[in-house]
Length: 286
Image (tube, rainbow, N blue to C red):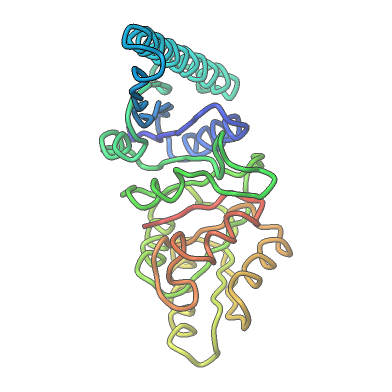
């Protein structure tokens, strides 16, 4: 049985992450592993205060700082344990509380290093658009999101704030290799099977992109999908966002690397803008 890795930090996105993971697990018949990582902080600098408060006083201060660090680490571990306990409880409400299909782990280090270790045998990584330290008032994305997408060898499902089971998905197609990988995955895996598919490419008519769009549509229809496809002019940020909104799309699918005006994706402005502004989950392929 494959596994879905659900990354949580206990932020406001946590309940939605679990719901997205449960939805995907049901469709993929996969287990869920909930991961909480306590990231290392920079070491506290030990300032030499002996010249002002005396050597003995300095030793006492350093001892207090060490005790504070130890206490903070213990609180972080207990908080992580509570977060994972809540995850199991919430997943149990979705019918996934059995010991065979939900597991948890707490690690110390970096999210990227932990994912590189745990993603073997996994079919999907689920992470929230924003973490506990993101500035919601400015719609900032979570600091770990780009790092996770860069390192993950499996698709990454970026959970939206609220979960609504999608009935239609949109592929933002630019002809790039990662986008073609997304199409192959969709055609051969059960995650999106049975859903309506809308493909949008942004470019000029009578181009190689137009021909690729036709081939893509035929391939997905051959895989059993109901497909509509459009090649539209304009700015990719606005065109794709408008299509997602106007067509009541429930899931946006994009390649993590490609070419054309959206070639940089997670590293550039278009994907960052779409993840931030589209109020739907985003499925990314590297």
